[in-house]
Amino acid sequence: MRPTVSRRFATLATPEAAYAFLADFTSTERWDPGTRRCVLLDGDGGVGTRYLNTSVFAGREVQVTYETQAAEAPTRLHFVGTNETFTGHDVFGFRADPGGG
Image (cartoon, rainbow, N blue to C red; front, side, top):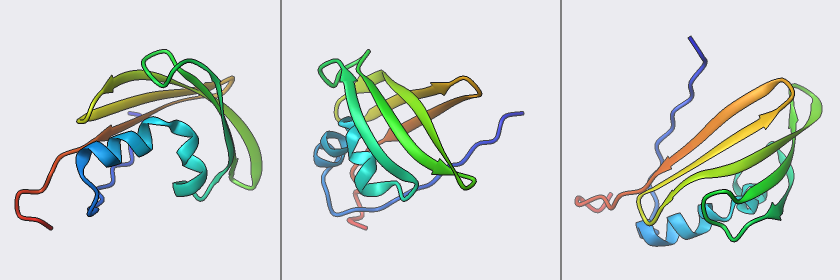
């Protein structure tokens, strides 16, 4: 069994705004405390776009190439990150809270 982490966040942003912010994976510099740098390698932000993420993990610097696997505005994003020892999936789902909270 692979380790899985799941988190849920509430925001005042609309699903469209949250999607737009996170669809540009370079935004990890602003919301992921481990990310030191994330640069666009190629692509237009849609499926197939690649990013190079440099993070500190377990006290050492690691680089992971992320590729956009799904971009279904404004409800879902899926990024796959890989390097020689790691494969990870970052999946984001967006929905409005009808209760407003």
